[in-house]
Image 1 (cartoon, rainbow, N blue to C red):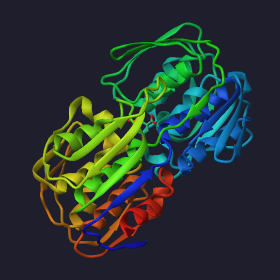
Image 2 (image 1 turned 120 degrees about the vertical axis):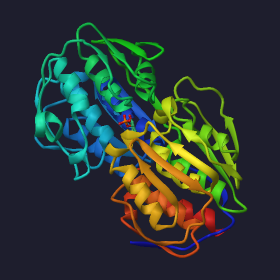
Image 3 (image 1 turned 135 degrees about the vertical axis):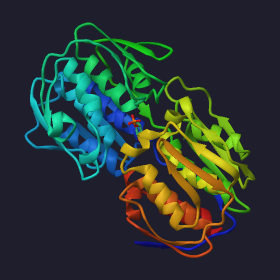
Image 4 (image 1 turned 60 degrees about the vertical axis):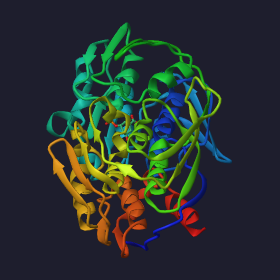
Length: 428
Ligand code: S3P
């Protein structure tokens, strides 16, 4: 339980948020299946990415951690060896779904488990298409839930239209497709984060992308690369919102990833009328990044839905808080995926923000928030979900009274130094 006091004015300073979670996971995975030594700088040392490192060590990959830099000794797909231990993915959905795609094509047996949250998250979105490719996967309720047991098989290419817009499913299938003889086609209902596609190119692989259709051939040779991970825009989002809603604030966020498949939060802040400035660093083919400056803002409610949702899916809890401080009504729709995240984020956000005095209601596929509402304070909980814990900690800044958060330590999943940054920005 942590106790936070209101800070009604003055959030000031410059911070460098930690490395991007999605890119950090993928850097380990691609480093493991490429030939040679991959180095990764600004890797995110959060609990989820540490789970990925541990799983790949159990798969026989040498991974060195030296002076904040990671070295992965890859030896192609064949460098992965049958694990004698169970692979524990902890709380990480990305580790689970991507590693299944990789292991489905390896000629050995492996078992995956995770924590209580992972055990409730649907895996048939990856195990069903993998079975179509020839995979043998067993698990609870038709391989929908962990623990999962995988007996590697020879996979064959498929044409697959994703029923949900999910980068994890797309990436899982790309990792499986790389092990097949022939060309796999993946069609997305809306574009989702493209870190895997960029990573494949960065490691010397090939794929073609035509609007929402991706074609990839198997049996490509991937070669080791040097990866510089940009800061995580999903972590930066908490302080972008904090600066916008706390009086007399100006926060500068440096080295923030600005991949266009992730910048929905910036568009929402702009549409709501926030004072936000974005300066891109010199262009990078790999992953763009830049500096984002946000100041206290007068905000208006807006409607958020459709193709924007996958571009800000992880930011919806903090956007809900932002909307409580915008005049008028904010509607979030087409976001039913929130129900199958680390916790049911529609229920968690609505319940906990209501305790703090927000006017917010759940809908079938999102939520409706009425602002501008002063928040009062109280006892709330994170449900073990890092993003709910961080959202509530930012809410505490504008509450009239003290806030007590149960399970706030979950922030270490994606932002281990979140409270240090919060303290630094509020102390001036
Ligand atoms: C992620 C994709 C998203 C996102 C998650 C990370 C990824 O999940 O919510 O935090 O790294 O591919 P879905 O693919 O389930 O939408």
